[in-house]
Length: 91
Image (cartoon, helix red, strand yellow):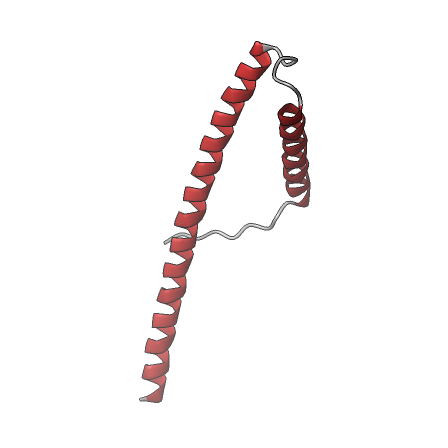
């Protein structure tokens, strides 16, 4: 099992948060704008973007679930080795 812990990059987190906020604002504006005003090409782009983004988010959820499982397994292995070492030291 190979688990790598990397320090968080504050700039990357800031840019990600900014992207998320801009995305939220764009979605809010498009939802509040009457559909008759928005050109069909923009609506098509928006639909494609939403599909792409939802797939990315689903993949990220799956990655996070697998990462969580690996971490839980690593913790279990650490606890098991600690129990073995503790049992050996008590003997």
